[in-house]
Amino acid sequence: MKRIGIVVLTAALCVLLSGCGEGDKPVTTTAPEAAIQAEKERNKVSVAREESFTYTDHNGNAYDTVYRIPSINMDSKDAEAANEEISEKYLTDFEKAERECAALTSLTCEKLDYEKFENDNVLSVVIRRVFFSHAVDYSVYNFHAVTGVELSSEGVMKSVNITPEQAQELLKKQLEQDYVSKYKTAQPEKYEENMEKTLSDDNLDQAMYYLGKDGVLRAICKEYASVGSGEFSVVLTVKSAS
Image (cartoon, rainbow, N blue to C red):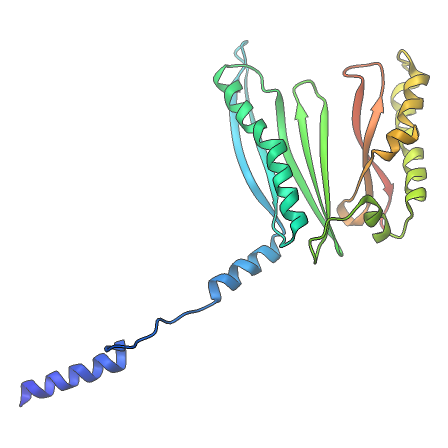
């Protein structure tokens, strides 16, 4: 009897505590999925790839640098297209750096990095690539911070209550001031010609606008001069935050 009682008690505990028997259903939860989504909402931009490179040139000089490119973590076709474009444009830099390190040569690209800025409903991502020649190039992506829809330059301007015409006129003034401050005294060859090219509508139309820290409207455009590589990307403030 005592043995039978123990068996019955054991069976009862099994049913109560561990759900012994057929027909049991696994317990499910949406917590992990919700946590992942919440993490994406907190981090609309994260690191897609990051790699450190240590290399020694043919003169025995040692250098360290870091390459880092972003991933836009927003559920939209525009964000997906931007990520594909970023990968296509910049992943080859990682591969090239690996080959150059192995060959003990200076890196063609000395630095690759990005910044992100979120101001109200505008998310801006600016990627900067610095070359051994000291030339710098940029890529700019602007999105609506809620919908993930990519914003045009006009959309960015509208967010700070400025028209394209006003933005271009302000940029032209800033660009002229910057150009004169750099080159007027030295008067490099073709100074007037290159300043005219710098301030041309064709050049201004190619400017990339974004909202930087504290909602400042900024633009990246070219300056032309008969020094170095002959053209340079500059970042200028178009309109300060109200």
